[in-house]
Image (cartoon, rainbow over all chains, first blue to last red; front, side):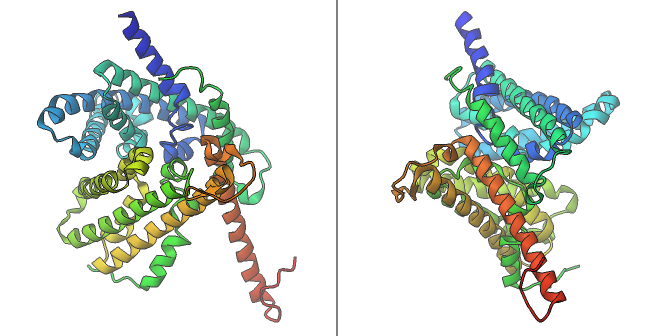
Length: 197
Length: 219
């Protein structure tokens, strides 16, 4: 049991820090550069992503291991995972609108952006490739979500400062965001020896 | 209902490569632009994969455009895209297994590309088949060119080699093939293209205001 829980903890740390999706796997960059302009949106996006990643990791694990592996139709995984995520996002959108309009008002717009996002789709694909168990998949989804939220928050706090800084004209906006990201990625490389999986 | 495209095929290709370049101008679908560009070979293969998917998806959507109800178009688009991505994914695993090992995940993630959805939504779902095919090729070529430029610089400066062959006999900047260097290279290239764009625009306005000295940059 202890080895199990240590393994899970290691997975969470590895997925969020040493193998951070944004800085070492380069996923979710569109969202990362798109919504990291304001702290508030970054926070909302981070929370929504973490929740959606965990739930879609669980759902797709169930479908992959209980339906697709026995039937030997794993080559359909791209289509099936996209379907699962889109259906789940659509469902939670509808449910949230009815159950808690306040939360929907805050996080609803992010949900709409999520359904066809590479970082969400990557979690089930990696889970399937690595043949994680159910709990490991959940831990991986959770760690990835936390890592992505962390990246968004760091980036948002830096970009709020850059807005008032004197950046050379051709580098305004995107190029500067890229260069800042490379600096953060350098810092994250320092964590790489922490845990190896 | 049919919208006739007013621009010629050549202009469609030029638009895909220059004014609407996926990476440098629209700044979407950036993940593979950094992930697979640490060597020229993987960058080129990824570009070809995207070019193929984009062209085929555009063609098939355009062929089916009269049968797709606008309200359910998104799920249908996604189905068509993931079908073609699966085709590409499996053929790459079969024909280029070594490169596929490095970039397999990113090939599968072509399915979530904003640029492909943009191509369908803006163009292929309204235009004739040939024009859509050309538009797809243009956008795909733009992506390919961007990936080749980025990976050319990253491999040359980061490893001192090109396409796996050793060319430079000096100590390379290892940082450029590491994750951090990828962001840095793309940032610098984007800044460079922005600078070129403003420089050319300035030259053009100067050329029209001083017809006697066309193209001379006087400040």
